Image 1 (spheres, rainbow, N blue to C red):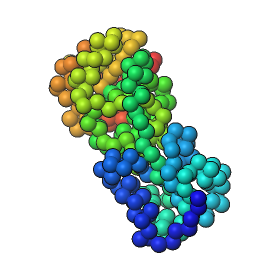
Image 2 (image 1 turned 30 degrees about the horizontal axis):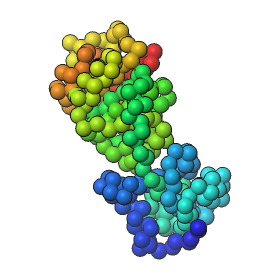
Image 3 (image 1 turned 90 degrees about the vertical axis):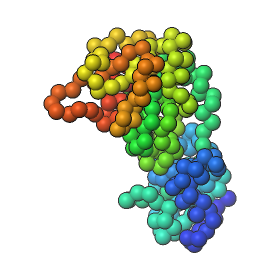
Length: 261
């Protein structure tokens, strides 16, 4: 079904904006908002598209993507440029937006525990960091991610930074990272906690096991003490100069490279 929307007060537009801006709305409705030709087209392979919004200019410029999305979306809505500006969360909107159903991640639990190299993220609050870590994890071949206390994976900034990786990478969310690490250890994993402390082992000199999980902590406070104490080893990225620590996504990238190397 296709409709034309020109009024900013349209309920479908207002609902899409709520999903864009509110993690609570996303949780309650089981829906999330995506923007961009490539991101929406890639997502169509992994999620159910409830509603597509696009402008006439977008249909002309991104004809292949819009054609694909119109085939897959339950409903397609052409919108004016003014409506697109209201929907957009970017500086240079492409005029393509989707409302999608959130993924059921429960089936990933067994898959996570049967894989070899896992990244664990504790209290990551910057959506761009979360998305960048997921994108790097997928690129390097990391098998999955465990999240605890992190920002919403469906945050638009996280989705843009991930470029689809948050919808493809096996991800599970846990209530307690320390308990999760104990569980991993019982399943034969080497558990690592990252820290900038000089007393920790150099990650480049650490004997990485065939099955390993490493925790990356909050941008400002790092891994919690409880979680660090539950891990078998503490590791650090060796640094020179006067820098005391690395950005969380950069530290995660280096550690994941070492895990896969």
